[in-house]
Length: 197
Image (cartoon, rainbow, N blue to C red):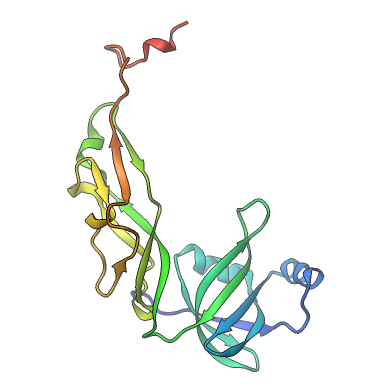
Protein backbone atom coordinates (compact mmCIF):
# COMPACT_ATOMS: atom_id res chain seq x y z
CA UNK A 1 0.00 0.00 0.00
CA UNK A 2 1.13 3.52 -0.73
CA UNK A 3 0.14 4.58 2.78
CA UNK A 4 0.65 3.25 6.27
CA UNK A 5 -2.16 1.12 7.63
CA UNK A 6 -3.90 3.23 10.29
CA UNK A 7 -4.57 1.74 13.71
CA UNK A 8 -7.97 2.24 15.30
CA UNK A 9 -8.65 1.57 18.98
CA UNK A 10 -11.74 -0.63 19.32
CA UNK A 11 -13.90 -1.64 22.28
CA UNK A 12 -15.75 -4.94 22.40
CA UNK A 13 -19.53 -4.66 22.43
CA UNK A 14 -21.15 -6.97 24.93
CA UNK A 15 -24.64 -5.55 24.52
CA UNK A 16 -26.26 -5.75 21.10
CA UNK A 17 -29.54 -4.50 19.65
CA UNK A 18 -30.86 -1.27 18.21
CA UNK A 19 -31.29 0.47 21.57
CA UNK A 20 -27.62 0.00 22.45
CA UNK A 21 -26.33 0.88 18.97
CA UNK A 22 -28.30 4.14 19.12
CA UNK A 23 -26.65 4.94 22.44
CA UNK A 24 -23.23 4.22 20.90
CA UNK A 25 -23.85 6.55 17.97
CA UNK A 26 -25.04 9.34 20.27
CA UNK A 27 -21.76 8.89 22.18
CA UNK A 28 -19.75 9.32 18.95
CA UNK A 29 -19.03 5.61 18.49
CA UNK A 30 -19.37 3.54 15.31
CA UNK A 31 -20.71 -0.02 15.72
CA UNK A 32 -18.92 -2.68 13.69
CA UNK A 33 -18.35 -6.43 13.45
CA UNK A 34 -15.14 -8.36 12.70
CA UNK A 35 -15.33 -11.82 11.15
CA UNK A 36 -13.41 -14.36 9.05
CA UNK A 37 -10.32 -16.57 9.17
CA UNK A 38 -12.14 -19.25 11.15
CA UNK A 39 -12.54 -17.11 14.25
CA UNK A 40 -15.81 -16.17 15.91
CA UNK A 41 -17.42 -12.89 14.77
CA UNK A 42 -16.71 -10.08 17.23
CA UNK A 43 -18.90 -7.01 17.78
CA UNK A 44 -16.89 -3.83 18.40
CA UNK A 45 -17.22 -0.07 18.45
CA UNK A 46 -14.84 2.59 17.11
CA UNK A 47 -14.46 6.34 17.34
CA UNK A 48 -16.86 7.44 14.60
CA UNK A 49 -15.12 10.70 13.60
CA UNK A 50 -11.67 9.12 13.28
CA UNK A 51 -13.02 6.10 11.38
CA UNK A 52 -15.04 8.18 8.91
CA UNK A 53 -12.06 10.47 8.25
CA UNK A 54 -9.99 7.47 7.14
CA UNK A 55 -12.84 6.07 5.03
CA UNK A 56 -13.27 9.41 3.25
CA UNK A 57 -9.56 9.29 2.36
CA UNK A 58 -10.02 5.95 0.60
CA UNK A 59 -8.54 3.72 3.32
CA UNK A 60 -9.70 0.10 3.01
CA UNK A 61 -7.39 -1.71 5.45
CA UNK A 62 -7.06 -1.03 9.18
CA UNK A 63 -5.22 -2.42 12.18
CA UNK A 64 -7.87 -2.79 14.85
CA UNK A 65 -6.44 -2.66 18.37
CA UNK A 66 -9.29 -4.42 20.17
CA UNK A 67 -9.44 -3.97 23.92
CA UNK A 68 -8.68 -7.31 25.56
CA UNK A 69 -8.34 -9.16 22.23
CA UNK A 70 -5.10 -7.95 20.65
CA UNK A 71 -4.62 -6.46 17.18
CA UNK A 72 -6.28 -7.58 13.95
CA UNK A 73 -5.51 -6.54 10.36
CA UNK A 74 -8.91 -6.07 8.74
CA UNK A 75 -10.39 -5.12 5.37
CA UNK A 76 -13.58 -3.08 5.08
CA UNK A 77 -16.04 -5.51 3.46
CA UNK A 78 -19.32 -3.66 3.75
CA UNK A 79 -20.67 -0.29 4.84
CA UNK A 80 -24.23 0.09 6.08
CA UNK A 81 -25.78 3.49 5.49
CA UNK A 82 -28.65 5.26 7.23
CA UNK A 83 -32.07 5.48 5.60
CA UNK A 84 -31.10 8.70 3.78
CA UNK A 85 -28.11 6.90 2.28
CA UNK A 86 -25.62 9.60 3.16
CA UNK A 87 -24.13 8.50 6.48
CA UNK A 88 -22.28 5.32 7.47
CA UNK A 89 -23.90 3.70 10.52
CA UNK A 90 -22.20 0.27 10.63
CA UNK A 91 -19.06 -1.41 9.23
CA UNK A 92 -18.32 -5.06 8.47
CA UNK A 93 -14.61 -5.91 8.71
CA UNK A 94 -13.01 -9.13 7.45
CA UNK A 95 -9.79 -10.42 9.02
CA UNK A 96 -6.99 -10.62 6.43
CA UNK A 97 -3.24 -11.01 6.13
CA UNK A 98 -1.24 -8.57 4.03
CA UNK A 99 -0.34 -11.16 1.36
CA UNK A 100 -3.91 -12.38 0.90
CA UNK A 101 -5.48 -11.57 -2.48
CA UNK A 102 -8.82 -9.77 -2.29
CA UNK A 103 -11.34 -8.19 -4.64
CA UNK A 104 -12.76 -4.76 -3.86
CA UNK A 105 -13.96 -1.53 -5.43
CA UNK A 106 -11.75 1.55 -5.46
CA UNK A 107 -12.49 5.09 -6.58
CA UNK A 108 -11.25 6.35 -9.95
CA UNK A 109 -9.36 9.62 -9.43
CA UNK A 110 -9.60 11.69 -12.62
CA UNK A 111 -7.06 14.41 -13.46
CA UNK A 112 -6.97 16.74 -16.47
CA UNK A 113 -9.40 16.50 -19.39
CA UNK A 114 -9.56 14.57 -22.68
CA UNK A 115 -8.69 16.57 -25.83
CA UNK A 116 -12.19 16.40 -27.30
CA UNK A 117 -13.60 17.83 -24.08
CA UNK A 118 -12.03 21.20 -24.90
CA UNK A 119 -14.16 21.64 -28.05
CA UNK A 120 -17.00 24.17 -27.73
CA UNK A 121 -20.24 22.58 -26.55
CA UNK A 122 -18.68 19.17 -25.84
CA UNK A 123 -19.39 17.59 -22.45
CA UNK A 124 -17.19 15.10 -20.57
CA UNK A 125 -19.41 12.32 -19.17
CA UNK A 126 -18.05 10.11 -16.36
CA UNK A 127 -19.65 6.68 -16.84
CA UNK A 128 -17.77 4.89 -14.05
CA UNK A 129 -16.82 6.22 -10.61
CA UNK A 130 -15.41 3.00 -9.11
CA UNK A 131 -13.39 0.10 -10.44
CA UNK A 132 -13.33 -3.48 -9.16
CA UNK A 133 -9.75 -4.68 -8.69
CA UNK A 134 -7.91 -7.71 -7.36
CA UNK A 135 -4.61 -7.53 -5.52
CA UNK A 136 -2.80 -8.47 -2.33
CA UNK A 137 -4.00 -6.56 0.70
CA UNK A 138 -0.64 -4.80 1.03
CA UNK A 139 -1.01 -3.43 -2.55
CA UNK A 140 -4.49 -1.93 -2.22
CA UNK A 141 -4.36 1.62 -3.64
CA UNK A 142 -6.37 4.48 -2.17
CA UNK A 143 -7.64 5.21 -5.70
CA UNK A 144 -6.82 4.54 -9.36
CA UNK A 145 -5.35 7.74 -10.79
CA UNK A 146 -6.23 8.48 -14.41
CA UNK A 147 -4.57 11.36 -16.29
CA UNK A 148 -7.05 12.25 -19.03
CA UNK A 149 -4.76 14.60 -20.99
CA UNK A 150 -3.51 11.67 -23.10
CA UNK A 151 -7.00 10.58 -24.18
CA UNK A 152 -9.26 11.94 -26.93
CA UNK A 153 -12.97 10.97 -26.73
CA UNK A 154 -13.46 7.57 -25.08
CA UNK A 155 -11.80 5.76 -22.17
CA UNK A 156 -12.40 2.06 -21.43
CA UNK A 157 -11.28 0.05 -18.41
CA UNK A 158 -8.67 -1.65 -20.61
CA UNK A 159 -7.10 1.80 -21.23
CA UNK A 160 -6.44 2.48 -17.55
CA UNK A 161 -2.90 2.13 -16.20
CA UNK A 162 -2.91 -0.16 -13.15
CA UNK A 163 -0.45 0.13 -10.23
CA UNK A 164 2.04 -2.70 -9.87
CA UNK A 165 0.42 -5.85 -8.51
CA UNK A 166 -3.12 -4.59 -9.19
CA UNK A 167 -5.44 -6.16 -11.79
CA UNK A 168 -8.77 -4.69 -12.91
CA UNK A 169 -11.56 -7.26 -12.71
CA UNK A 170 -14.20 -4.94 -14.16
CA UNK A 171 -14.53 -6.04 -17.84
CA UNK A 172 -12.04 -4.26 -20.08
CA UNK A 173 -14.69 -3.04 -22.54
CA UNK A 174 -16.60 -1.19 -19.79
CA UNK A 175 -16.90 2.52 -20.58
CA UNK A 176 -15.16 4.74 -18.02
CA UNK A 177 -15.63 8.12 -19.68
CA UNK A 178 -16.73 9.60 -22.99
CA UNK A 179 -17.05 13.03 -24.57
CA UNK A 180 -20.55 13.93 -25.70
CA UNK A 181 -20.85 16.16 -28.77
CA UNK A 182 -23.49 18.90 -28.93
CA UNK A 183 -26.94 17.67 -29.91
CA UNK A 184 -28.35 18.69 -33.29
CA UNK A 185 -30.75 21.60 -33.64
CA UNK A 186 -28.47 24.23 -32.14
CA UNK A 187 -28.45 27.59 -33.80
CA UNK A 188 -25.37 29.52 -34.84
CA UNK A 189 -25.29 31.20 -31.43
CA UNK A 190 -25.18 27.79 -29.74
CA UNK A 191 -28.71 28.01 -28.30
CA UNK A 192 -31.34 25.42 -29.17
CA UNK A 193 -34.16 26.68 -31.41
CA UNK A 194 -36.56 24.73 -29.17
CA UNK A 195 -35.70 27.06 -26.30
CA UNK A 196 -37.73 29.84 -27.96
CA UNK A 197 -41.39 30.30 -27.13
